[in-house]
Image 1 (tube, helix red, strand yellow):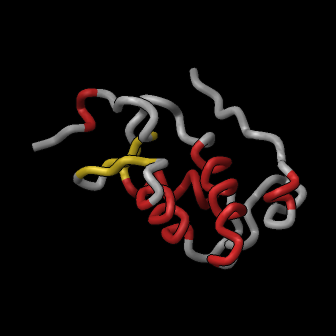
Image 2: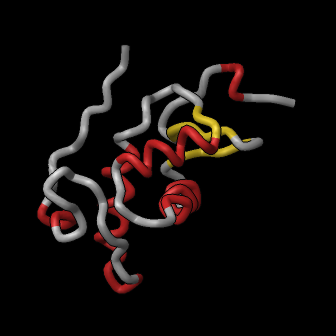
Length: 104
């Protein structure tokens, strides 16, 4: 069974995490480096090669964030090419999804 290796808090994102490592805020666009560090942190929460439907992906983000809209994080992960998406299925962009991830 795969277990997420939660990356340790780094100085660049510590200001955006609570004592449990949950993301508590989203940096402004002027702080893009902090946004990218958060996206890298969140990517590590997704199992390589596993596919997630939208509800599962949002649940991962909801569990590791106190933001009211985890959909913002999901959008940022996809737009930043950290996660790939197709037909409502999401997977880490640095790994191939299981074959059944492709429907059609």
